[in-house]
Length: 112
Image (cartoon, rainbow, N blue to C red):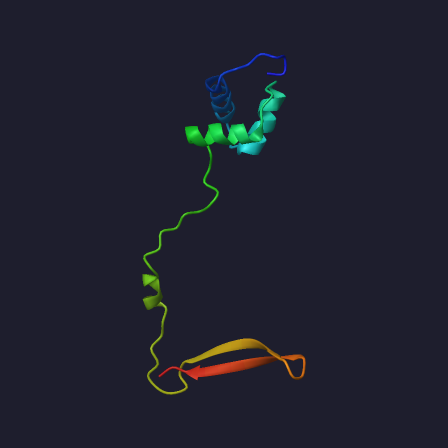
């Protein structure tokens, strides 16, 4: 605390849970650190992150999506039944050393 008293980690966790218990409050560890400092705590943001992670109070920063090894692709591919029905194009950016210039190469494939 700012007045010189030392608190245990459990006391800090209780304070964090109290702040998160307020309606419409979903703070991350950085905003939580500033909220704790306003309450009189003298605490580092890294410690707040560690304590919140140990208690499971952090939100996942990455959205975890389970993919079934791209099985969905089979539904998006089209089957060509005749020539010139489905074309695939690719553009490449090349550097021509002799001329010192750049060029674009367009490749067109007919999927039969």
